[in-house]
Image (tube, rainbow, N blue to C red):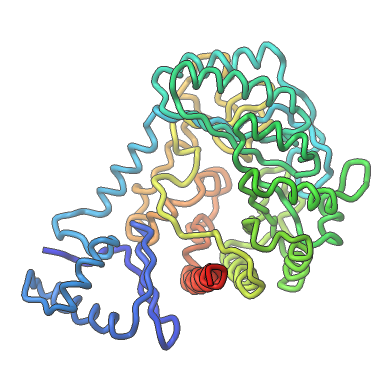
Length: 448
């Protein structure tokens, strides 16, 4: 007998539509008032234990609801299914994911950067150890995913070239899929560098723009004091069409709708409006080094409000909305046994925030892994299914317990550990639905 999914969300949007969303399947649909009335009648019958005898409209809607995961068999435990998929993702070794920082040096002097003035580059011996590490595991791999990180990774382009070449050769030898992305400030993303990265199978890049030029240049100046915004914009125009581009805006309390609006206007003037994905990063005091910025950071609840305001502005100005409440088996890499961050000395970490701080290392890539090391277990042992508030939350599939570092290292409350979806799901679903309609109208206009 069918039953409603625990992870359903239905909300009235306009006089013409209701939004239907299921956090477990990720399905989003629009329902007319007539369809929603049929749904309400159907629910009454399902709750009463009715197995058949539905009218034609109810029977057709039931098929669609089953397809989208809004309805499931009453013998099916959604929570147990989530936990099963979570454990598979945690312990699978068929995929190896490495975030590699070939250098911690940077050409910028960002006011909030926890990496300070660190230096250092990977040695030839460590590059060999990295390649050996992958080859030892290669026969059991179906995929290797690399993210180049730093510091500013493009200051070590020679190392990216060397390691990428070796990883690609190993993928051809052992027949695993290889893919890579890069997190960069974008200043060194010149046409020559972009073309070379494409040859090395780097398919996506994340670049930070912290506001319009007047704000960004103050928050993210070059170490020589010069501005960076104009050069980054020029570089992005070349990257488009060659890589997927995500623009990250690190948001603190100094940002307003007016600030973001000015940035969007400048991106539109640069011809980037329909070509880049924009996301808003919640700037947090993730380490002790960041304590000097803590007073300027938003709490999660407050950030969720400004985040939805900023996405609404994206919609109004015709930008793409790519942030989706998508289900995931895990919250982040710290919950996966086969994912690591590697610093220029080969030290292994379980969180991006820890890179370069050896006190958080779980060992070196050249050594045998110790999966009982306290710095491995601290975050890996966080299990969302052990927390009653998580088990009873109908957004668990898209949150999976929230950031383990927030929960364990920073001692935040359960409300602060939760992702912003808990607080802004309804307005964000409305923005996403409107964005999809906007895109459909745009495509129809292009085809006419």
